[in-house]
Length: 419
Image 1 (cartoon, rainbow, N blue to C red):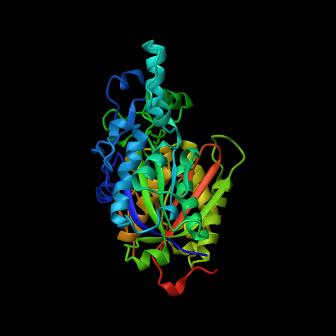
Image 2 (image 1 turned 120 degrees about the vertical axis):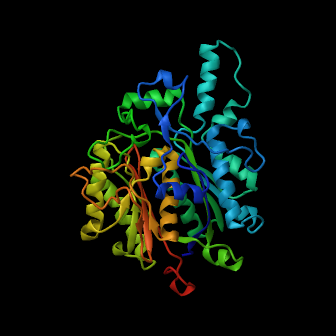
Image 3 (image 1 turned 180 degrees about the vertical axis):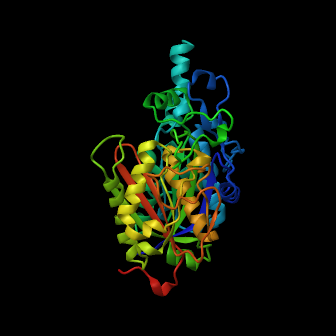
């Protein structure tokens, strides 16, 4: 079986866009969570959101105003990853695929259409409404921008969408179906309809009036829920020998990908289902020489809901046994919010940066941990990692889908995966 390596990374996030800015802000606990401004905020009981404030105009020459925001965010992240990889004209278009995830697709376009039709009583929709709103618009715009003629696939698996897209792209490379892939996730859910729907679900964080930017507090005793955010994360994945032959910057290797389904409840998390996905990823990583004790850092799903954080704590214990007690774990959602379909991609990039830079981002605002969340959740300050071998990222979704990714430091060619 072929090896999949990462040769480029890109981020557009509320905690900063561009991988350097993003990771520095994670290390320094710079939050992108804010009260949502009027007029949208005036309609909300829980008015917190995490918005991308950086300029994302004209990625690949595509005006952001000409596409839905979820596509514009995706193109911004892909442009950074593509440039870093030096991938232009390095692989036949037919051997280059696009694998991207999203939960809601073009939410802003849909809401604008309904507003025009039912509120403003217009009798005509924008002619590009369908092409902007369709869930595969982001992947299609990426393929158009890069000239990718291989598979162009969209994964809609709620909060696991980005992680699933990366995992499936890696499998396509391992099987030989493609040589190179652009993979990740994107989401722009800060529309009134989606925010009000999440209010109804009663999973959103209460606002800390004095320090609203600290309102999302994963694993903390005083946590009250999640904060929705927008963003995108993108990776350029490549077959190892192809990347090495062209002198590409090989950043890490995809060592494991695990999937499971709880099959118990649409929204209530299940510790055994989550542990099963972690075990599956670890079994695959074992084929590359990585064991559970080699995982140096875990980026947790860590949404800051009461049930979610406690369940994930238990699932990590089941998957890692004694190593769970010494494993550094953090949730970066405290700073960038829950990015839904983009979460798995952005958080995996945070884990990759921890691996390549030997430092793990902390769990911000964790002033007092919940006694039921009793693992090493790296409170408040970053943690140096000494020669980390591998990292893990968890993504657990409504519907019961659990997706786990493992990346490892790049091994020499003598350590090729068994065929």
